[in-house]
Image (cartoon, rainbow, N blue to C red; front, side, top):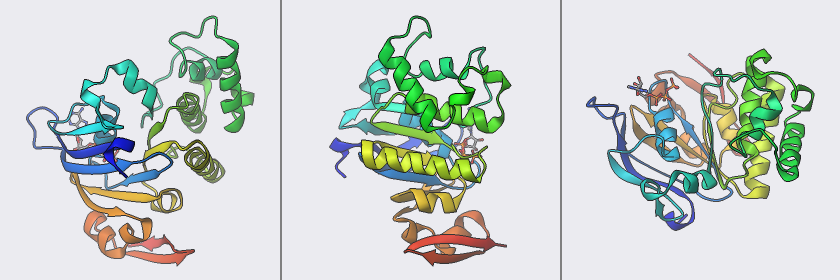
Length: 257
Ligand SMILES: Nc1ncnc2c1ncn2[C@@H]1O[C@H](COP(=O)(O)OP(=O)(O)OP(=O)(O)O)[C@@H](O)[C@H]1O
């Protein structure tokens, strides 16, 4: 992928305050229609990288470009047309219904929405099987339901790129599988570029075209799932011995000790 045609993180270093850098010369690219999964141990810098890619944190060095344009020079409103974000924590809730919360993905206010916005919200809620919860207040939802509402709020925006931080965290097996399907569909049919932080390696191998493995703020391996998910890489990064099987050319972690 050319940096002119995607979301491109080029040699990015970032540190909180004067502390040693949290990200060290990280590179990655997400093209239209591609799914890239970001894996790595706790504290390795995944969320920090996603926040840099969203323009929420400013890199110390390197640059992030969207279709060749420097994100730092882009006004927020313009970047917002390209990027949607599902944060890691979805426990901050507002006194509004699920419908209103998703509608706010499209508009600054839930008041007097236009018909097209209402229909978009309805379609996304239906796709995520959230319609029965549409009128429920956000603060009465379970963790998984709230997670799905946060995903819906990002999906409704239909931006070219979707950045998700552990979106399957609170979900049960069915809802994990459904979320995988929806994200794949978004990449394949709508050509959205997806950068997703995950902890579950087997979800990453099923979902992603490419996996980027981070450790201590650095990219340890990057490539197709079969190239990155190897016992050697996982031992080096997670300090565990992993059994891996292959199905249809994809690696699956069978267990670890
Ligand atoms: N606001 C902050 N101020 C200072 N240090 C921070 C801040 N946020 C994160 N860090 C530190 O930066 C490092 C990377 O954190 P980050 O949240 O990016 O990791 P992560 O890979 O997403 O972790 P996890 O898998 O646990 O969510 C950690 O050492 C963390 O303590």
